[in-house]
Image (tube, rainbow over all chains, first blue to last red):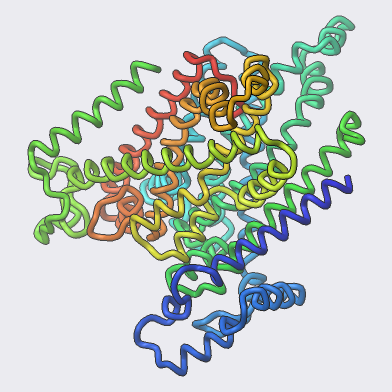
Length: 302
Length: 263
């Protein structure tokens, strides 16, 4: 367990270093890029000093870490708002979207995967596999507009975009959730197929349990373990997916903030958003890892 | 499935060639036909500047394929070299490499490529650079794992004890055994780079106007969805057909070459 924590610490340090280098070690003068040609010399020097760009690079990195330890992400070049406030204001929306998408992914993926496994090799299974392959090949910037066109423009059931009303989350969450459900379907199917061949399933059947009990009480429990890992790993693509999905549906989360900051060349905000998303991912992964180890006694000491 | 994949690929090849022969103009602005519906003159309609969507889609395929071929070749060469060395040498070099790849993998999906492209500035060259900087990692992991499993086979040990140099052992005795895995991986990566390129272009970080690119067209298509839904549908369907065909091609190669990878 200790080595896992050490590993996570090294990865987090690397993430900090890489996001730092994003702004401070790019070719050319970041101040020129951020302010454009019309800025005065005084403006440039001011910004350079604000960002600490006049210091040696190691000093800059140390200051960056020091500020981060006090949750100080610096301030936006354009609005001069503290970036920490911007992120804290936007984060809950992203989290809400990711959780809804996860629930949708689970609600579709697990039953579909079980269904596929129970009909292994028959046409139902082929259909399930086909659907899950199709959906995983659909990136958010294609599935999103498709759902928008169908449910908002043609059928008019749901709002096109924005965050007003409870129903506005449905389309962005479906967009993200469908992609996730495809992977979950495939993993559940594979995992179930493996478990269904185990001796304890034959024993459960032999002692006269109904098929429903065999599936839910014996097979599913054992099959769920690998699915936990996949869910953890997929949280990452879910978080990355929010960047596109939030942009399409004007969902005011961290992903949208990232894209806005890129458009305005507000580098410190871009940097902070990338850091926030990457750190969330690392933490979710570490938590998944620990949860998995706790859930499966066989991995103790490994 | 194989037939479907091949016919889609053939379709796009023929379409691009015909488009070139016919001299389709992807950048000609026609303000009388802004967002025109599909018809006799513009088979797939016109975009927000009255440009021919068919011509732009065909131009977009070419750009998309070039970008994904270049990125795949560069990332594969780089990643495989690093992975072979790490897997063969082991020890400290391997540990450091694994830490570095773990750090890269801590950025989910295309997030790191988005960040690089944002800092480097928009444009085709920077787009390719950003995708290369982030794409080599998976090849390095794959090549390392494979090398480690082959490293102690008898023919490698024999070559080593006969005094073969490291480049020779890696190039002549290990790399050929990785070929089928790498071919399959490269096929899938063509499709995923295509999606990544479109993602960056969708965010305005890739190919710049007036050049045609699928990502940028999808973004415009979403913007004008209420008045011209055919725009986004045409571009999206085109792109998905190609990505799907390439992925199915990957599946076919995987089964044919008997490669077992967890995907």
